[in-house]
Length: 238
Image 1 (tube, helix red, strand yellow):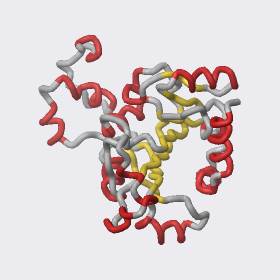
Image 2 (cartoon, rainbow, N blue to C red; image 1 turned 120 degrees about the vertical axis):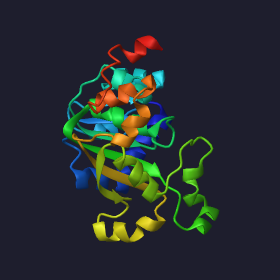
Image 3 (cartoon, rainbow, N blue to C red; image 1 turned 30 degrees about the vertical axis):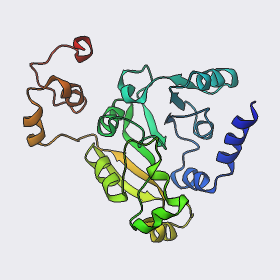
Image 4 (tube, helix red, strand yellow; image 1 turned 120 degrees about the horizontal axis):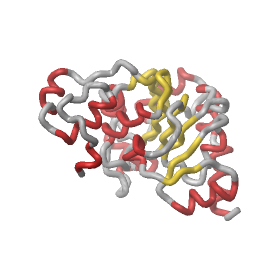
């Protein structure tokens, strides 16, 4: 194994934060979809049947050579990939800030998730106190490779408005929930723990805005609100 890859696996295995997440959410036994999985350094710690998705072919090749289930694909079109549709958990860490359409991404996850699936979304956040941005540790959210930027509150709203019920928001730096909650306001990286809202529907005002626009019909199909006049496949029209 390449020494740099080895270091990545070792760092994850020794990560107190990740081990706190595994233990708290009991993820070691759960079938998990790992989005933006890298070489599978997180993936190998999840339950049987877990699978990762990446756009890096060398990571897919690594998975094949080492018995790690990694699929080539773009998570922005996750609903079009040939994957199982009964994942208990969807894991996406350091991904949400990079994708073009965060809302559409969250809606499309419902295609692959079980009705009671859990979403674990790890995202760097802008600190509540701006002066903290003077320190390197708190500037991760502003990386030049990021195209989306969130505070804790805007992140929670983004997840909820895409049909996921937020159950918890923590850094998981501490095993203690109390200590985590006490330090949330200065944590540079937070994890949203959310449950699939299987009954989610867009508000009628939004339906009115979208009723004559073909572009949004694939999202409405997922929420079972698709306009009946669009019976053809949107992908065939592109």
